[in-house]
Image (tube, rainbow, N blue to C red; front, side, top):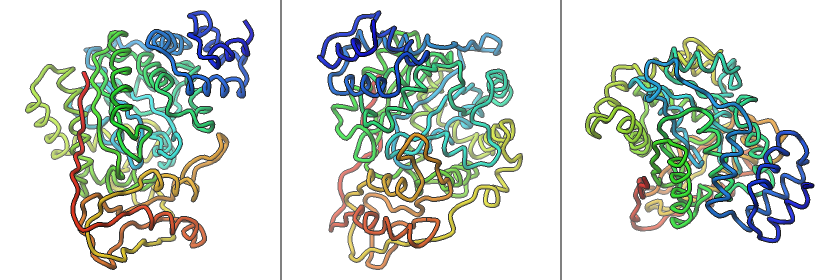
Length: 436
């Protein structure tokens, strides 16, 4: 069957057969489907959707498009776990969560992605550390996970290669939000990673790809159902993304904030609540302990420095600075020009146009408009105010780090318009729902 016939079938809202899905995935890897045909197919799926059976078949084919890792050589393979976020502005949870879990005795082979749309990617954040290898070979990846307890890398050529190609195309053709494509993309990598347990951070709000609770719940149910069908313990936690997660957004600045969090120098309360909720889920799933015991484990490894030590070991093992915890201000470069957005009124922040903040970062080089675009890791937003913060006229709402004043001028108006200030606080919660 030729590619255009398969595309036409889904374009006409027909259910794809197992053979058609198999040929599509094989065609991505072999090159029988061109980039334009892959883009057309992803748009057809985006517009017409896939039912549960199609989604399971697509996920299975994506998983089997490459190698599946085995952790039989670990002392306890049941301790292999991971977390995935559907993406948001300033989402730096993975940078903190993986070393925390490793310090608690778990093993975290985290296969992460690059930025999609207005959201920053975990891999791009690690690229802000000179020397850090986000694409090690399989043998090195397994060795670091075994010796350190965690490794955060990108997809290896042999791991779900069909997803790697499709992922990059989805980013630039406007099909990021497709539920079946999100489900198959996330889970094909996770299943191929040989996990026993998985927690999913499904973002809800204007800074995510799921603006409505209904869509987020449908995605969560899809992910949990397919993951459990593949034999993985899984829970989805729906978290708020109507504001930047933490104090910063941008690759280098988020890496710096994460190091300061792990070393107890500057810990954002909202970031801590969401990170701990996800960590507790995995610790309870894998160690069969109570939630209270899980909280104690997390607090202990943060306070005694073991989580920070795991982070530094991971960075060093993958080619980064061996003393990143003390050298990060010299090693991780940030842009020199600082531009402040000043409030012109008193009140409380009632709304933040978070997606707009993410788009501002792309505009100044902190994200991709085309697949081939190179990211400037140094640019970012710092000291970002949060919803319900009390604001006085003259207060700084956000500071932009840009390459020059002209770049700041490009986004100044959009940044200023991203913060809505009113007279009263609003109802807001960080943890919205749990799907297991």
